[in-house]
Length: 518
Ligand code: FAD
Ligand code: DLZ
Ligand code: SF4
Image 1: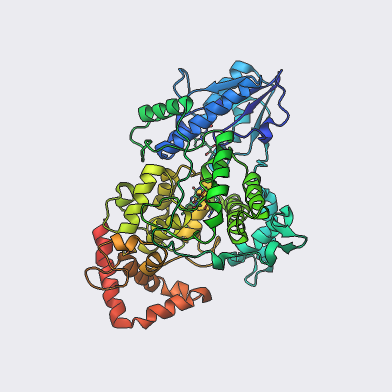
Image 2: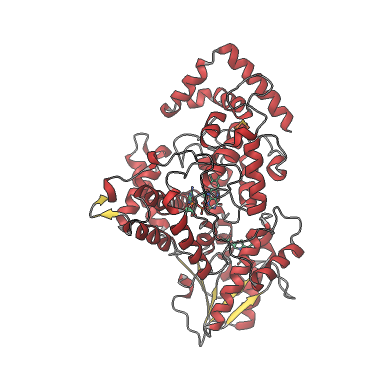
């Protein structure tokens, strides 16, 4: 017997390690659509449709190359509904000599996979997922070194910082390097990447990919099987094949990358995507490689069609942040998911699902998320994330929300962004200080406040912006903890400048606002 090679829904990559030495004469490839993966969180309808469509396209492409493919569809009779159940069933049918897999993206699935050997009585080989730049072991060693160098010793998590990691990755890959030096003489052009979008600034429509017959069928399956899941399918336009994913990347590089840098942190009403790449769904499902993305951006810079600040900014997100959060995830799981450093306990307000709130910024972001399964980084971090942080929302519920609502959500990337960057539940493993901000930040970086009944300049009175109330209340609530962090000193200083009387007034109003949320 040959090998049974298991391909998960986010492993639809030609170069997948589990397929590298495939013998079409002897081997079989298993792709299993299963209920459990569609419902372990109630994913956005677009995410499920995308993954099912990608699996169906991929299975077809393999079969067209003469590979024996066992593709179990969600609605096939006898489908056990779980990955383990389908692996066992397929092993009984095909009697392979061994099972070959690629390391899964989620800790939960790894635990499952580690049991497949006992379940089938077959040897199971789990290969590294080499679709990333940085192997988890390499990250582990790097993190240990950083911790050892930190003044606080091995328990000082503050030493794991993106910037240093990113430079190592630049050196290791040679991307945007000129010999030993960073291209253009600087590692980081962030300071140039914080512009507000000028009024009536033209924003190109990103290319959408109208659903083909396979995607339409996947969408019908989703409507039939998961009608109660969050979100709508009407605007589905994600690429579901490697070829379309590449076309989407090219569309970004030609039409949006040149302005990606300057407006990376901007937000604008009615502009859900601005100059962003829209590549995360493809990257995470395996339709696009991170190397391809970085190379395409660097090519544009070399050809003179995109400036370095934009190209470096984009490369940093993929070569830096994406790899960094994955490293943190595998270093810190499973404990990471349960962290709650700020002891946040408040339940997630209903408007996160309904969009029914008079806060214009939150309304815009939640509604576009429902319709598109997408929000860009600053919306995720500084609107829904910031509100969750300063309102003290329960990390487990916040985490679940982020897993549910986005088409690119997989726990390895979602969890460190949520528990780390957005709500600081990890106490500083990912970033050295919480990204807490008042309404002034949202007002500076967007035009949302013009649509809002609240006033971003007020912190008391009936039209005080809730972000202001909650921001000051958040700082006061955690003053003792934050006083130990020098990076929080300027914020605490501003808070103290309000004076005890005004602060008490703001906090009383914050308490009333929070009571009204439940
Ligand atoms: P662009 O802005 O064009 O960036 C290019 C690429 O860089 C992205 O596609 C992504 O692959 C990578 N990238 C950018 N920022 C990050 C980051 N902070 N971490 C990891 N990769 C990054 N990204 C996900 O892919 N899945 C998630 O579930 C997810 N959840 C998030 C939750 C929160 C609270 C926050 C603050 C961020 C989250 N991100 C997540 C990161 C980021 O917001 C998205 O990757 C990005 O918005 C995707 O859109 P884009 O492709 O247009 O990105
Ligand atoms: C996300 C997802 C969905 C919705 N459905 C399936 C599926 O039916 N079969 C499958 O193999 N994978 C699916 N996936 C992707 C897995 O959830 C993903 O592989 C794990 O979360 C690990 O990243
Ligand atoms: Fe959001 Fe406050 Fe601006 Fe309203 S005023 S849009 S709540 S930041």
